[in-house]
Image 1 (cartoon, one colour):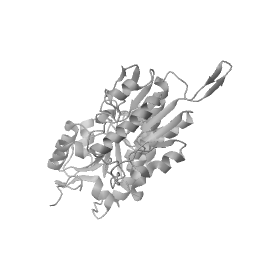
Image 2 (cartoon, helix red, strand yellow):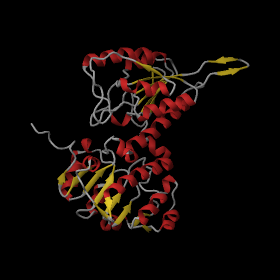
Image 3 (cartoon, one colour):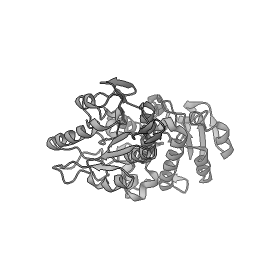
Image 4 (tube, one colour):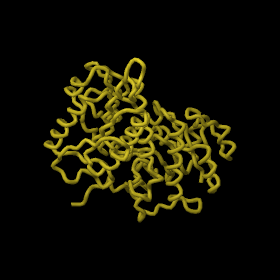
Length: 376
């Protein structure tokens, strides 16, 4: 099998799908690896490092795609790149199929087998393949550093000759992987941390990191999807949630929001009225900026100021730690390929829950249960 590692062309994308370490392991499995020239440069992996593993460096992008049996990428390649791929070739990358119906239809029509790194089920057997969790952890860490950078206060309590400075107060909204990493990082930096999530099951995890869990009584008994994500709340529960969050936002120096609902716009957690009640100089870092934002006043990709509060709407935070993000993503992808490739050939066993859910299209058909119409 000829395996292609293209250079990422999406704006702000510095990651590479396969690092030299994993390239060497794939070659040992009997695969022929072709790496586009400078594919790893933005994440500080050089062509020479790939060459040392036995990979071929390819300068012709069109040739790279047209001869590949398997393309491994971070973001979905361009329409021109997809047009150059062979029928029955395989693409593995982030696809976000629920939000990209036209892309899925195009992959199906072209006869490209596509596996979505964002579609790997959150089950224990797939933990080492879970790229969403890997990237979310990096985003939570980086969000805390962004908050510290924009805040004009210390995070920790400081005892000085001029007096004692109290610690900053941080509120983390959403205690998934990104939220938990944000809690841990803010705590390490010395802030006093509170966290809220609609899923009461995460309370123990929040408290184990030294943060206080903010509780809101909700109508729903079950607030978690099968995949471990938060469900959308009823109108009454949303109002209760807003009231409690408002009270805690007012007291916070830093608010980091991480709440997402798969296939839906990000839930609104912080209204403009809440922002107006915050202390001057407070900072909001909205990790849901790309999906519409958890804060009503977030502008994706920009740092704005409203009511003397800084609102940061970062895009593609994992790419800002491109070296380690690439290392983790590459290991996630290698774990998936170990399941998929048997004796140098792909084996699409759809009895396997991981392959069934991760495969979006195959042989001109839509495979993913998420995309198939529900039977009446």
